[in-house]
Length: 464
Image 1 (tube, one colour):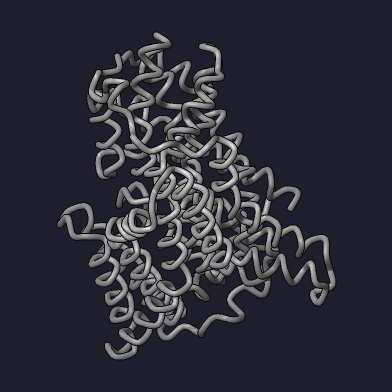
Image 2 (tube, rainbow, N blue to C red):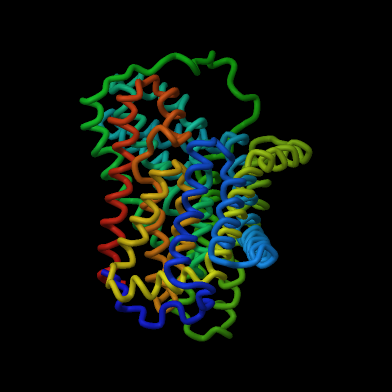
């Protein structure tokens, strides 16, 4: 397990504290408290809460207002440039996947070839594949008609079918880029995206198995819910456009993943940076290039492949952007909050404290993210804040170790979804459950996913 004794040089590249240690600790706690209270009590949008939290940290730490504003805007701009473009491209790809019928093709192909006993496992696989490019909320809305239909036809009930799909969606949202949470942590901590993606998939698989099909067998005995007929349609009223084939759809979905993994593998196995193959893979696997290629290819394989004309494809990709405007602002404001923490020297202080206390880094990262998740109900806010506080602790770590810190934060960020999380109410309403039933199923699944994710990350920490 990684511990802080492995990072004797922690904080070497961070600014020196601008105030006494006690004042910086108070500044950090007050800033986080402002964010938590603003979101949970005052119901302020997370973007404004993060702006207020960043300003509070700087002012309480003793910095002048112009200095605080400069720090915040610098962090805001760099995060928008580094992460915002990737989120926008990912949203465009997801929209093409949904509107072309490619997502439906994946669902129908996998579920159609599964026996009744294997249906929960098939739904977990569907959730993971759909969750790879799509945000959780979009994936849930897309999958609910399928979950209803499969639950009724199989006679297994809504929970044994729905929970595995939710586990697949949630695990990808917490562990695997290009989702906002992992991207923010990767950008903040300077982790390698390709390597983190590979390790994230490796962590996600066992956690999905444990919190999905295995837990669903137990949860299905606790809570019995029949699937409604909300999305029933006449077969003759299906889409007029043809769907892209399963093979073409999977090629489109996995293309950016393969490109980014190719870059990571090239860095491991090709030591000569000037070798042509290494240089080509480095370029193609750069996240911005990989996702841009994926979107352009998807315009043809998914867009044109489903019968869309150029105008329809343009409208489809454009329609993806308004829905993520709020996410982009939240993520960028989180970058501003992070930069204020960095410039006040709080990261250096925490690094020195954790090194002296010998607190395991991965456990600390998970606990910080889990506590903020519990307080705010937002996985993204939890990831932003926890990764900001971990900055001084990763300077002496290898690339693989930094990736594990990112994944530990991701695991903590999905811990125990409850009444302050919009996802809690979304699942409750779609599944037609009471609050108590939602706690027994959805909340327990998220907790199990979080804890099992930490266990897998700690296990990897023994060998990386």
